[in-house]
Length: 220
Image (cartoon, rainbow, N blue to C red):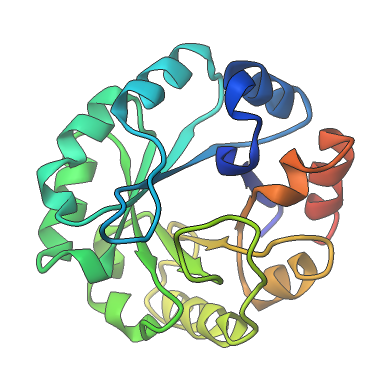
């Protein structure tokens, strides 16, 4: 692992200036743009939908890292990929057919990601590791930004990294961590085996986006 991917979450950006915010983040060194889609049912909040993703796709020069926290993701992945998702992550808790759904996302031309809530055992994703590109470990309970990191997430990251190495998939499947990432948690998360850091408040809430992103990447 030679580099860290930083994916600032637009959930923490100024909602009245999202276009300018993602441009500023790109200029500061952001690698991806993390977009949290919440339906008010699978998680207790409502956020963005397909129209916003289409609009951001027109402006962004970095991949759109779309995280769909929705019930019945099987019914909507086609629309999210068509809207511009480069990486599309669904929750394993929200589908009975994770294997088929991951295959569908890849068939549509996007990278398939699977997200796991803090209480979900990491072993639940092991049977489909050869069919996905990203595993997103939620280090907070999904639904709201600005929450504190759950320390037990580190053990899940280490266990996942060990399984990927055992299956010789550690060069292909990325480990992404979402929730509570800042200067206090990034080092331990990277040491545990994470390669993609979702940082919302730490980047968009800082006075200097470039310094914040450089700080996260410096832990490598």
